[in-house]
Length: 156
Image (cartoon, rainbow, N blue to C red; front, side, top):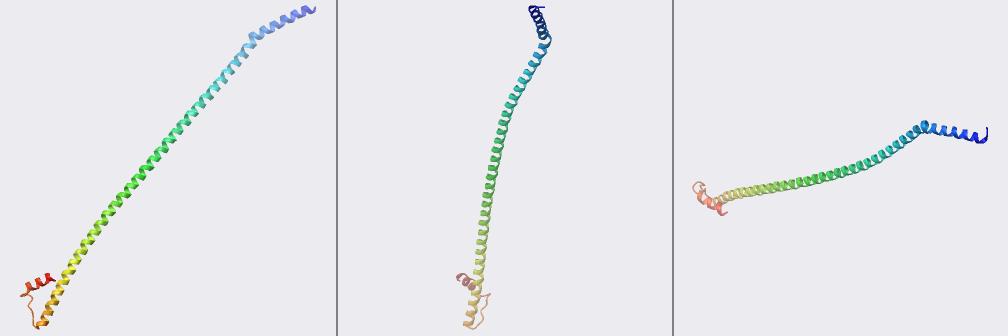
């Protein structure tokens, strides 16, 4: 066989091999490559989606954290305002109680002063009667001279 015949036979064998490969070997390899490409694309898409969800979840967490901080600050401000209000009410009640105590003490002091004056007047009247009795050297009848004693009390 000559080189041309060998070359022709090799070409025929090569073409048969290429045809066999194109018909039976290449489609499964191409399908596997396409499937692999689809899986990679799906994985990248899922990764992008997960990244977007992570960003959205992070924003949601930040918003909820901010809302929680605002709520806590508002509750703290309300508690402080309530405490201040309670303190003011307690001060007002204490001031009222103090005023009542001072008024009661003042009234009691007035009563005691009046009683003391009355006692002193009676004692001075008794002393005046005793003094007058001692001066006159005789007994004075208190029942008979009651008007005189009353007038003496008022003058003193």
